[in-house]
Amino acid sequence: MRKNIALLIFFFFSLCKLNAQSTLFKQQLDSIQELRLLSKNEDLDIDIRITLAKKASELSHKMGVDSVGVVTFIRT
Image (cartoon, rainbow, N blue to C red; front, side, top):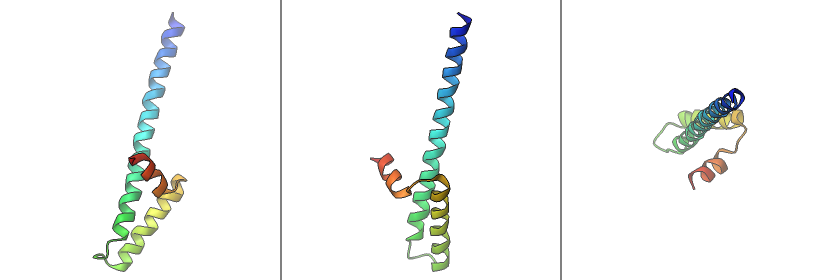
């Protein structure tokens, strides 16, 4: 009985951790998408737009994802 309770507690906390990781991942994808959109804003100075585009690219590379494909997949 104790073993079953321990397994249940372990499973519960594992699910909580996965949910937190998923939330963080989605937040990071949203950040990439926002940076990409801002980098296309012609009202901003070109140097700022380039910096925003580089940040989006660096974050995407760091996460190991193609930001456009993943964000489109998650939002549909």
